[in-house]
Structure formats: C-alpha cells, structure tokens
Image 1: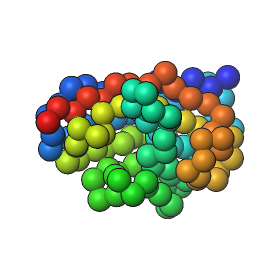
Image 2: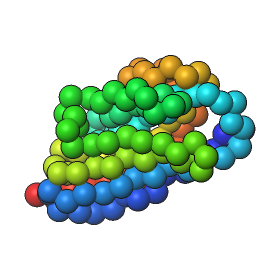
Image 3: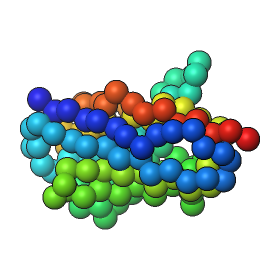
Image 4: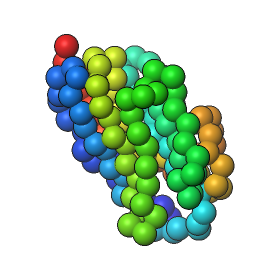
Length: 124
C-alpha cells in the first residue's frame, strides 16, 4: 500500500510563509503525478497544485499562482508546497495526493492515495 504523511502546517500571520512536506512510503509504482488539495471549514475539497513525475510540468489554481510553488524529490519520496504571501483565505487543511499514473490533473478523482492532512491557519 501507499502511505502519505503531510507536515509543516501551523498558525501564521498574513504575509508569512510556510513550507508543507509530503512523505510517501510503501509501493512506488513510478512514475506518478502528485498534487496538493485543501479543504476549508464548511467547504468542499479544492485543488491547489499538481506536478508530474519529472517535475517538468506544474499547474496551479488561479488563487495561488505566483505565491505557491510545488516541487518534489523522487529520490527522497518527498513532495513540497512552498507557500509565500499567505492570506487568511488560504486557511484550510492541506492534503497530499498521489495518482497511479503520471498524469498531473486538477481533478480530485484523478488521485488514488491521500494523506491525513495538515492544518494551515492564517490570521489577518
């Protein structure tokens, strides 16, 4: 099986930065795409960013473009989300997701494995 564990969340002030990490273990079945999603209280889970296996393709939701950067280190089985210029509307639980295919997508249904999430809270 595949296990994904997120870390790096916390409580910060508006304008601050955080770096989320996602550690993958278990079956690798490379290559595969990965992504970050988030879910705010009372809202549906939404797409944040995705990256393909080689890291040559990334895609972001409009609200985070220019502020967030997704990256991965396949040798370490890690994925990251660098979040700069955080805003209160970025407050959510952030989830790491992994596909069984190397097809970076914004669709939640494209991902087969999910972590438990890490809380990010941004105060104004």
